[in-house]
Image 1 (cartoon, rainbow, N blue to C red):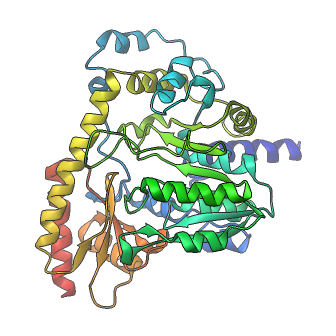
Image 2 (cartoon, helix red, strand yellow):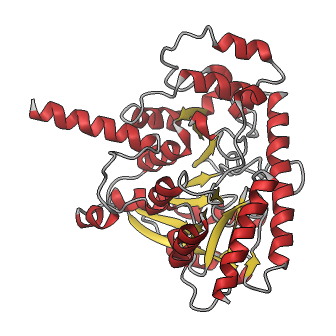
Length: 409
């Protein structure tokens, strides 16, 4: 009986992790987790703790979410059909029409190259643990979304890093990557376009990463959730998929599509690896939600996809212009950094005695505005801010940051 209870608790907690939910309502603080040899996901825990407790949440990593009726404005009959949907399980790989829609965003992909997951969070987790074993060497881009570093550490992988260089507009240090990769390297993890800064790799930089990986036969895990959220132009950011035979490209409906509530992500890779990811997925969430499959399939297939992406890009472009104008009024207290895509960017903060965690805490406590501290993302001296929001909401939040800066001058 005792073993049955333990297995049940582990099952429930594993599902909670995959769905980005807290394990319990009274989870212990990070220090206690660390004492047990576990590296906590500090960024997400902090955001989850405070995002609904502030007046202005400028820590969001995506654009302002869509409403259900907004998503189905072009097909109200499909929304009506959802009322008659039997709430059963979805296919393990995802609905065929969903996988076809996802595949259509990658050159040369078909539905056989795609597995649906519970958000990019599960896709990244399942992908990394599919091609590595404890003790394997992995090389991670920094700064990056904290998840991959935490997954690697908690699964006993040997981690190395290569930097995006702030002084060079967050260009990758390819010499550092070459030095870090050895014949023992099993995987190189990149975030493209990058979270937290929003910079995309150039074609030449992508080719260099591929050449370095190919030299030792390493996999490339490419977190590409911001493809489709470009600040300029109409084309999607190029994917690593199709450029090299050992790529797992991760995407999501959360960022470029404004549908984070669907908790729908995916891995795009070769069919054999899809099957291996599926095997790991069966220990995590078994399948994605059927309702989410239907809604995501509608969003990702044309013509709806074009309309959804256009909405995302308008929010990003209008919000970025407002943010840039606000920066110009801050008398050098903050600076914009390089940005190509996404609804987030890094701000370099030039206040005296700046500590990103203290800055974020004081801003939240004194002015009810939430940002993400750069220390959680590997970029001290910076904070991450969201701008793909309603303009009135964004402007009011920025006004409160201005008021806080006045107290620091």
